[in-house]
Image 1 (cartoon, rainbow, N blue to C red):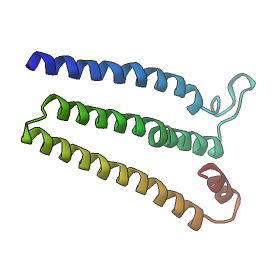
Image 2 (image 1 turned 90 degrees about the horizontal axis):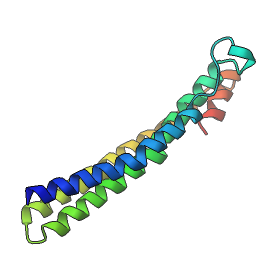
Image 3 (image 1 turned 180 degrees about the horizontal axis):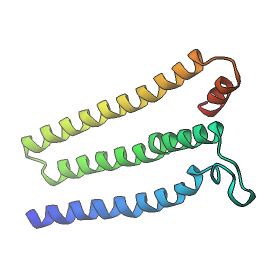
Image 4 (image 1 turned 30 degrees about the vertical axis):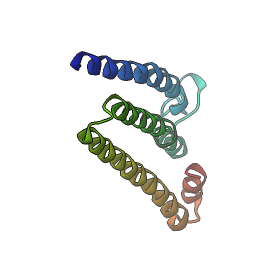
Amino acid sequence: MPNKKLQIVSSFVLALVVVVVPMIALAVGEFVTCDGPVGISGGTVCDLNKLLTMVNKVIDFFAFRLVPLIATGVILWAGIRVVSQPESVNAKSEVKKLLWTLVLGLVIIYSAYFIVQAIINSLVADNEVGQTLKETFN
Protein backbone atom coordinates (compact mmCIF):
# COMPACT_ATOMS: atom_id res chain seq x y z
CA MET A 1 0.00 0.00 0.00
CA PRO A 2 2.76 2.57 0.72
CA ASN A 3 4.15 1.94 -2.76
CA LYS A 4 0.78 2.89 -4.28
CA LYS A 5 0.68 6.08 -2.22
CA LEU A 6 4.16 6.93 -3.42
CA GLN A 7 3.07 6.42 -7.02
CA ILE A 8 0.04 8.68 -6.54
CA VAL A 9 2.11 11.42 -4.89
CA SER A 10 4.87 11.23 -7.49
CA SER A 11 2.30 11.32 -10.33
CA PHE A 12 0.66 14.37 -8.78
CA VAL A 13 3.99 16.17 -8.32
CA LEU A 14 5.06 15.30 -11.87
CA ALA A 15 1.80 16.62 -13.31
CA LEU A 16 2.13 19.80 -11.27
CA VAL A 17 5.71 20.33 -12.42
CA VAL A 18 4.80 19.68 -16.06
CA VAL A 19 2.10 22.35 -15.88
CA VAL A 20 3.70 24.94 -13.59
CA VAL A 21 7.33 25.08 -14.83
CA PRO A 22 6.51 26.06 -18.43
CA MET A 23 3.92 28.50 -17.14
CA ILE A 24 6.51 30.28 -14.98
CA ALA A 25 9.14 30.16 -17.73
CA LEU A 26 6.80 31.78 -20.23
CA ALA A 27 5.64 34.38 -17.70
CA VAL A 28 9.15 35.67 -16.97
CA GLY A 29 9.19 37.60 -20.22
CA GLU A 30 5.95 39.30 -19.26
CA PHE A 31 7.30 40.49 -15.90
CA VAL A 32 10.27 42.52 -17.09
CA THR A 33 8.97 45.68 -18.74
CA CYS A 34 12.19 47.66 -19.17
CA ASP A 35 15.90 47.35 -20.04
CA GLY A 36 17.60 49.01 -17.07
CA PRO A 37 18.17 52.49 -15.67
CA VAL A 38 19.56 53.89 -18.90
CA GLY A 39 17.63 51.79 -21.41
CA ILE A 40 20.37 49.47 -22.64
CA SER A 41 20.80 49.63 -26.44
CA GLY A 42 17.99 52.10 -26.94
CA GLY A 43 15.39 50.03 -25.07
CA THR A 44 12.78 51.12 -22.57
CA VAL A 45 14.13 53.06 -19.59
CA CYS A 46 13.14 51.81 -16.12
CA ASP A 47 11.23 54.28 -14.01
CA LEU A 48 8.68 54.17 -11.19
CA ASN A 49 5.84 53.41 -13.60
CA LYS A 50 7.68 50.40 -15.09
CA LEU A 51 8.58 49.10 -11.61
CA LEU A 52 4.99 49.33 -10.44
CA THR A 53 3.80 47.64 -13.62
CA MET A 54 6.22 44.78 -13.02
CA VAL A 55 5.09 44.40 -9.38
CA ASN A 56 1.47 44.36 -10.51
CA LYS A 57 2.21 41.69 -13.14
CA VAL A 58 3.93 39.48 -10.56
CA ILE A 59 1.02 39.83 -8.13
CA ASP A 60 -1.52 39.12 -10.88
CA PHE A 61 0.46 36.08 -12.01
CA PHE A 62 0.51 34.54 -8.56
CA ALA A 63 -3.02 35.55 -7.56
CA PHE A 64 -4.86 34.74 -10.78
CA ARG A 65 -2.74 32.08 -12.50
CA LEU A 66 -0.72 30.11 -9.96
CA VAL A 67 -3.02 30.10 -6.91
CA PRO A 68 -6.05 28.70 -8.81
CA LEU A 69 -3.83 26.01 -10.32
CA ILE A 70 -2.47 25.01 -6.91
CA ALA A 71 -5.97 25.11 -5.40
CA THR A 72 -7.22 22.79 -8.14
CA GLY A 73 -4.34 20.42 -7.43
CA VAL A 74 -5.16 20.41 -3.71
CA ILE A 75 -8.83 19.66 -4.44
CA LEU A 76 -7.80 16.82 -6.75
CA TRP A 77 -5.41 15.50 -4.10
CA ALA A 78 -8.21 15.60 -1.51
CA GLY A 79 -10.52 13.73 -3.88
CA ILE A 80 -7.90 11.06 -4.51
CA ARG A 81 -7.41 10.64 -0.76
CA VAL A 82 -11.16 10.16 -0.19
CA VAL A 83 -11.56 7.74 -3.10
CA SER A 84 -8.48 5.68 -2.21
CA GLN A 85 -9.62 5.21 1.42
CA PRO A 86 -13.44 5.31 1.37
CA GLU A 87 -14.04 3.62 4.74
CA SER A 88 -11.37 5.50 6.70
CA VAL A 89 -12.85 8.12 9.02
CA ASN A 90 -9.39 9.52 9.70
CA ALA A 91 -8.79 10.18 5.98
CA LYS A 92 -12.12 11.97 5.65
CA SER A 93 -11.39 14.23 8.62
CA GLU A 94 -7.92 15.02 7.24
CA VAL A 95 -9.41 15.86 3.83
CA LYS A 96 -12.04 18.06 5.44
CA LYS A 97 -9.33 19.89 7.39
CA LEU A 98 -7.26 20.26 4.20
CA LEU A 99 -10.19 21.74 2.26
CA TRP A 100 -11.07 24.17 5.06
CA THR A 101 -7.42 25.27 5.16
CA LEU A 102 -7.51 25.77 1.39
CA VAL A 103 -10.67 27.87 1.58
CA LEU A 104 -9.24 29.96 4.42
CA GLY A 105 -6.01 30.50 2.46
CA LEU A 106 -7.92 31.56 -0.65
CA VAL A 107 -10.05 33.97 1.39
CA ILE A 108 -6.92 35.50 2.92
CA ILE A 109 -5.10 35.82 -0.41
CA TYR A 110 -7.97 37.41 -2.32
CA SER A 111 -9.11 39.57 0.60
CA ALA A 112 -5.61 41.01 0.90
CA TYR A 113 -5.54 41.67 -2.84
CA PHE A 114 -8.88 43.49 -2.83
CA ILE A 115 -8.07 45.45 0.34
CA VAL A 116 -4.83 46.71 -1.21
CA GLN A 117 -6.74 47.65 -4.37
CA ALA A 118 -9.28 49.58 -2.30
CA ILE A 119 -6.58 51.40 -0.33
CA ILE A 120 -4.67 52.37 -3.46
CA ASN A 121 -7.80 53.63 -5.20
CA SER A 122 -9.09 55.62 -2.23
CA LEU A 123 -6.00 57.06 -0.54
CA VAL A 124 -3.64 57.86 -3.39
CA ALA A 125 -3.18 61.54 -4.16
CA ASP A 126 -4.30 63.03 -7.46
CA ASN A 127 -0.78 63.94 -8.60
CA GLU A 128 1.27 62.23 -11.30
CA VAL A 129 2.55 59.40 -9.07
CA GLY A 130 -0.95 58.82 -7.68
CA GLN A 131 -2.42 58.54 -11.15
CA THR A 132 0.35 56.13 -12.10
CA LEU A 133 -0.49 53.95 -9.10
CA LYS A 134 -4.20 54.00 -9.90
CA GLU A 135 -3.62 53.13 -13.55
CA THR A 136 -1.11 50.43 -12.75
CA PHE A 137 -3.10 48.59 -10.08
CA ASN A 138 -6.50 48.73 -11.76
